[in-house]
Amino acid sequence: MTGKEILHKMKEKAGFATSAADTGKGKSKISKHITHGFYLKKGKSGHPMEDYVVSEFKQERDKELGLFAIFDGHLGHDVANYLQNNLFDSILKQQDFWTAPENAVRRGYLTTDEKILEQAFVLGKGGSTAVTAILINGQKLVVGNVGDSRAVICKNGKAEQLSVDHEPSKEKRDIEKRGGFVSNIPGDVPRVDGQLAVARAFGDKSLKMHLSSEPHVVTERISENVEFLILASDGIWKVMSNQEAVDSIRHIKDAKDAAKHLIEEAITKKSKDDISCIVVRFQ
Image 1 (tube, rainbow, N blue to C red):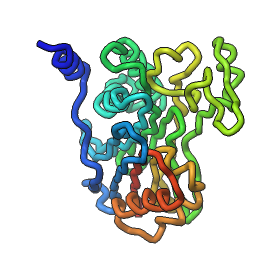
Image 2 (cartoon, rainbow, N blue to C red):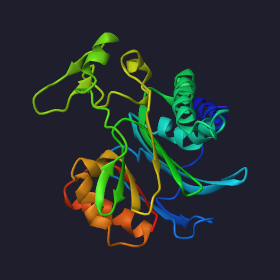
Image 3 (cartoon, rainbow, N blue to C red):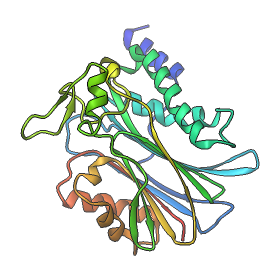
Image 4 (tube, helix red, strand yellow):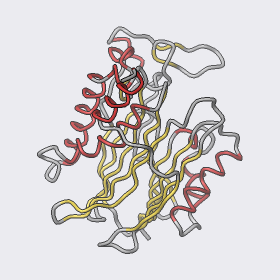
């Protein structure tokens, strides 16, 4: 067996699968008016696509869960691929998921990151940001994130950001306490140790002493004034504000078409990154 074949077998054992389709849609079985759609677009970089998504409804016990996530890999796609196949399983296996879902999301993120670091030989030196949303019975939304992929909800036409952009400049003190530094070179964004443009991420073993994988987690009740949710990688947010994104798709009823339209808008505004987007419509 060649070295490449051995590595492939190790990746299979680590929980890898091929990437899902680059577009798709579906709807809730218990709340027919709740629909979702996703779209991914390769950017102009020379490397392979590094984004992965989860966008699906599934039954757990006697409840329905909507599982939605954007994983934006860097320095390779293996960590993002691993997250696509394993992060939600880790969260749902936490004993207190049904009673304290915020705690379960937080613990699921941290234990998954530990496993990624343990398998760095297989997964490589790269990492990934993440934004996840778990919709419980169409009524409660639990959002978690590390990095700069973003969750934005639309309420009566107004954009509200549910995630936090973990920028190195905002967490400079914590990074320095861990022994790292934040570079601020003119013409470039702030970076951890002059390398990574986010202060929190999965993986990145060589920087891990100076990075955090602690997620920001928040719960949102789905009231009548909630119209839709956007999850998207930073390729959209670099060129569009939250309100611009909401205004751009508010009139589009099909969730998949809305996700595609947002990406096309970002490209017209000169975004060159890989871009992935999920839209969940509640009305």
